[in-house]
Length: 461
Image (cartoon, rainbow, N blue to C red):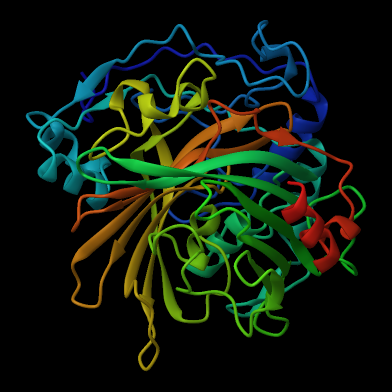
């Protein structure tokens, strides 16, 4: 058995024919670049990950990700709910209260805390599959950004458009910028069911209707007009106590010079008001204080309140290829169980992640005084975050259950979870099992994200 305790895997992955020549050329262009902890001859993927397998084979080589020729036959057309391409996989083993310490070096502090707090908590460990894939325009733009992108301060980016700005990061801020500007498709519409689950399993779930338009990573974006990350609008339609609460966000790329613009609709007052400020640890309406503005999409917004340290890259067990968590065959009660989401439907794999530590700057404040991020090297998606309070105590823990959303060639978290390790409750968001599937769309317009459009959305979501 390998030193990690995982069974070596003989992965005979194959490169899909789709875009093969482009991917090979981009791999060659990155072969000369080397990141922290790699040698100068280490071949890299088009987004800057280590292409090769680990020596023990527990993490396979990246061979192009989940491209169209590898989509499951049961997925018939764009707009269908995702079919699990790995539905026949079975856990290699389960981590339990009796065995997790044998693998502690591959577990975040948050996962270790869950095992300590909940004797019945379990983690199914599956074969690792490097399914992340992006459009060829993202690969080409990332290669171009590698030699021109730069930060003049933590929140001011220059010389980047469309692709990941820093495929070989030299700082923690550069890693977070890769997450912030990752390709998410042109736009999306979705039903988002979310809520706080209490230790006894009781919960009230909110149903939020959301739409987003992403403008940084599109085929029409140039260096001159890559000024906006995107636009978001969402309204709660149930339960009745929260119905009508709505939010509109316009997010620039450089948010300290051009802050996020936010509008809130209060159903009781029946009016839209512009918020004087938005971001940092402002609570998100409807989340009972469990989610802050900068926890949207695992992390969102300005970086200037923290000092950022890049701790390196290492193999970690993270939620990955979590297609079962968004299965239409499950109900919300099957997932949102007492103490933690039902382990029966989760999936964890060994992947290399970038580890970044953020500590609040002297003289500034934030409810999370220290954060430790674990970012998937293949997608620049944040998978895990350890959250510490001002006393240095591990307070909360975020998990993003990642899936390769193959129709749009992107990676997203379905769902996201924030565990409160003090109270025993947790907040879960981005569920849609009993509603329409997550829908990447390309026909949204800027006009759909005006104050007038928000009023229409509240009147008829």
